[in-house]
Length: 126
Image (cartoon, rainbow, N blue to C red; front, side, top):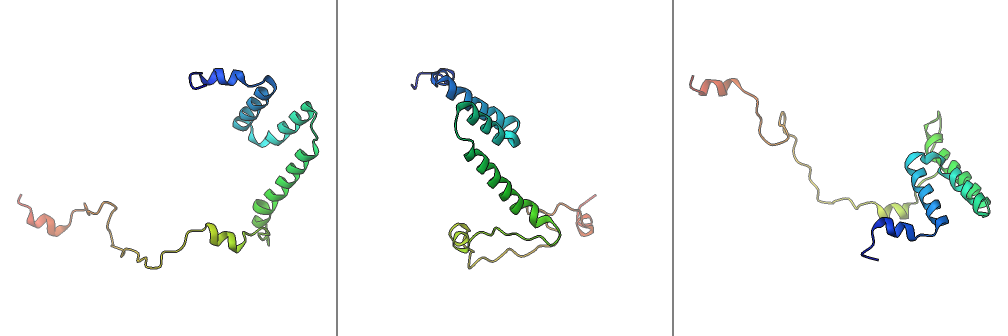
């Protein structure tokens, strides 16, 4: 298999799987919002149960509404909150001895202040 090109590997995939995979990739790249409907169509074409696809679309819409739409409305609130044990597990621990650098007025990133000052002009020979 190592000597075969990607095209040759692609052509070894069974035709139905190849068509399904190609449709999924193209649909995802071109029109991602319609992907659930395309997958539902493929389920119908292949004779699979569409109930799983419909339940997935319903749950996706409910999640989107509760996470993005509801909190932005007047008086809206976030109903879905990450449990504390997951936050403790995945959030980085705070650095206990961290001391921020002192603020230096008028200092540019790079460390050298390139502005001309009147006292600098007096020292330069003309």
